[in-house]
Length: 301
Image (cartoon, rainbow, N blue to C red; front, side):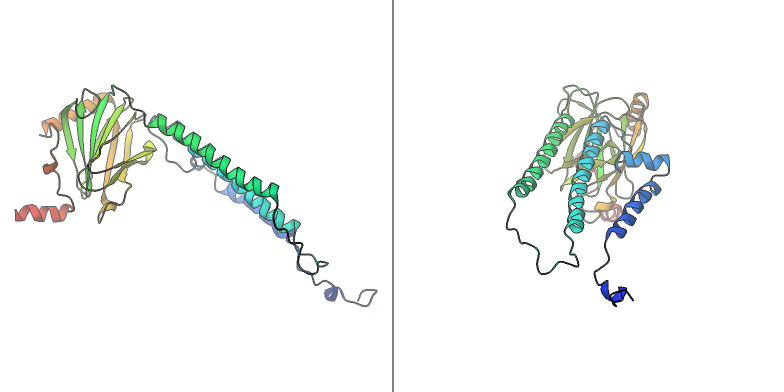
């Protein structure tokens, strides 16, 4: 009993303050972040912002844009959450409060702030994205190599060209073709610029190699082009990044980056196997059929 004759439990009717929970949360968050970055590989992945290890001349530009976007997003998130927690603590209901708090219709400085800041953020994002996009999509007049990528449901054809800057003024050397059951392998030379000419035989597809940090869509009746330089050798995975039908998930391919000498030797091997020139459209698997149904149809014919 207190000197006034009232027990402590009877007097203390206000809800517990949130400061204790906020302090515990502030201690747990850094520990959780440290626990997720123990290994060197994990730290490197965190540094890249979750991006795969790049293998093209676009790596630095795309990674910088990605990291900058995350920094801005985290800053905006920290500001918003900070204001939320500050409002929760600063304007929390107290035991001495009675009735509703003062009602404010508008606040001109605050309204100007939350209108102006998003516009500034969007403009900054737009500037850096447009700047990097114009640089990435720029093509040269004389690339070292030319490769035509033909998308089809549900695989890929690759035609290799030499000379010129595109399919129209280059000489077809060799080709490779694939099926959903046997994904093709696209060979590329390390350290040499490659012009990619993208065409579709049927519907919209998307040529995507995650390690190149780049993708571009393929449309029927329209040719898209881009150019990049593979920077390190190795085997990389590619896929279609545009839903194109029943077997979209099986529309895969491999990318083998080799030395220029090995690249030239691979073209000679394709020619020796009878895969010389450019693959005509009628030679590939018919659109809309996987490998098992394709073989059945060919047997019926």
